[in-house]
Image (tube, rainbow, N blue to C red; front, side, top):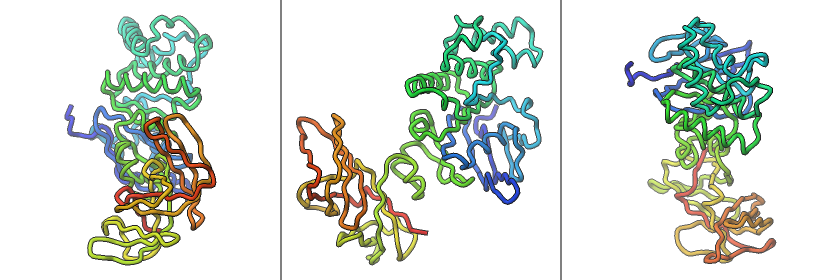
Length: 364
């Protein structure tokens, strides 16, 4: 098999329901062996896109290729895709072994081969000793691992997972996340994973595609999305963010001066902004702001603020501060015996922001 051909290739994919565009021009390539997550809120188009890849929905227009071959119009059983859903969809009257064997039985594989594959699949998810139990005798996490074994047992070229851990509590969810990552590293199967949970996406994925209104806003690693967001939506959706209002005041060669609320001025490279003038939004992460009782010297922008809330979390202290323009900023600062400084609520202070830590977006 040619490894240079994408495992999944979507080209200008559309899905319409009357006048509503559930998926609106999605194009994407997924590499063989990659773990790529569709991240977005409810109704953003991520599950509809996954269902079209699986064959449960047909696109209104556009192309879907698996390993270079078009699968548009091909029924789901002929696509060689494994699926894991939030609901386990296990057969309650069957044993664990029976549930895992089911996809092989409908394909009429020899019984000896079925037994061997089921044994291997249960070993992968560490449930080999539970083969004779019924689903009702298992915990939620164990049932989800049975569903995962069933999806892997016929060795699919692609594994699709739609919010598979949404029904589990936090501790169990993190355990299964780790188990899925280990399986991915061991097997090298291509995985497309759908979630609305940004922490889950960051924890598990090689790359993440951020969906909004049926479109992909940005595709990249977790570091790319967090440190180099392409749009204001991605900047606000991935991680914690602060947004400040600004107005382009002047262009000076390769730099742009932006006037913030109050008298503060921020100078950024001209390539940071697409527009020559007008309103902009400046995003800065809470951990990139230094809160100080006095205005510092140097290249940092000093914004006068008042401390409105302080929460001590051991190694860090979080603050909510209000600027002179009435904007609320979240600040996250490290705390230790070597750096014990804590500002009291009601204190007048300065939020020190380095221009290179800011992301500037034009207001549409």
